[in-house]
Image 1 (tube, rainbow, N blue to C red):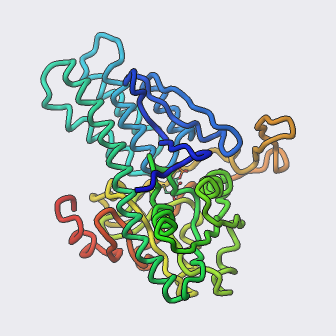
Image 2: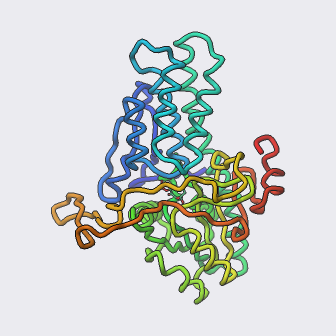
Image 3: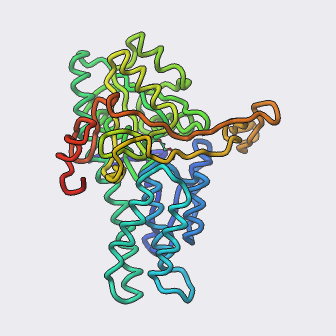
Amino acid sequence: MPLPMKINGLHHRTIWSDSNDPTHIQIIDQRHLPHHLVIEPLQTVAEAATAIRDMHVRGAGLIGATAGFGMYLAAIAPGNETVNERLKQGGELLCASRPTARNLAWAVERVLAETRDVSGEEDKKKMAFTVACAIADEDARFCRRLGEHGREIIRAISEKKDGAPVNVLTHCNAGWLAFVDWGSATAPIYAARDAGIAVHVWVDETRPWNQGAKLTAWELQQEGIECTLITDNTGGHLMQKGMVDLVIVGTDRTTRTGDVANKIGTYLKALAAHDNHVPFYVALPSSTFDWKLRDGMEIPIEERSGEEITQISGLTANGTIETVQLTAPGTRAANYSFDITPARLVSGLITERGICAANEEAISALFPDLA
Ligand code: MRU
């Protein structure tokens, strides 16, 4: 089996613990990509929360995995409190870091639940580590599986096109950088590539943070996948011209009825896809479902600093990354980070257990043990 995901040909995960010293948690600090590969150690739960809030790590699955390791760092922190008290405080700190991705609270709740009945302080710490590793490994495994299911959608389109490249449009980065390995929206693309199916990806730049331009285009290039960067407003035009066969996006939280929260602009892509009869799929591991919610409008939408819109950063000629002012000083900007795509616009959900319609009946039939 091939080993995604690679940087300069070497397999990497986005978060890992040092095999010689498991207390040593490391991440790729994504603020420096694609220009510099910077590895950052996380030594405390506060550092893990900062890494999530300030987007050193981002993407639903990776936020969840970082929260899992953050809980472990909380458990082993020095101090007079009990491990249970430290886990409770650590969980509150982590959950306050970003509001939209369900995976964050899901990971915190899982560590709390699986350590609760363990007796003995040292054993609780060991269990917190075991659970954090399990969350990360499961994320990678589930993404690989959903890639295999999604590959069959691409294969069917490829067969209809007599093997001509399948044009997939994606928004933001739901690639391996948004998870631990493989990614969600990109996993079917990598699986198709491994099956010898020709694929080309239209990459939305994804203003204002530019996850598409900085991360998705780079990770696809690292994997040798043909891709073209486009502005966020280009997708509708390409669909009208028959230049998009399929849209696959990720999600940060999906309700039990199939409403999807994803990076701002996703809803407009879904509308354009609907109008042009282009299939619109959402890929997610089950950790992204919010089983308590029925209405996407109840999902909390993060609002980030307007400076992410009024300023822009990039590589200078001397190799440093600098931020410059884009707008007139004092320009007011509203930075809503996510939007909701209603289930009626979603052709299907690609999960680790298979593909299902975006409705409560189909989702519950696939996940009877979780729903
Ligand atoms: O703000 P981000 O970068 O954490 O947003 C997450 C995303 O990259 C997207 O919304 C993505 O499509 C879903 S996360 C798998």
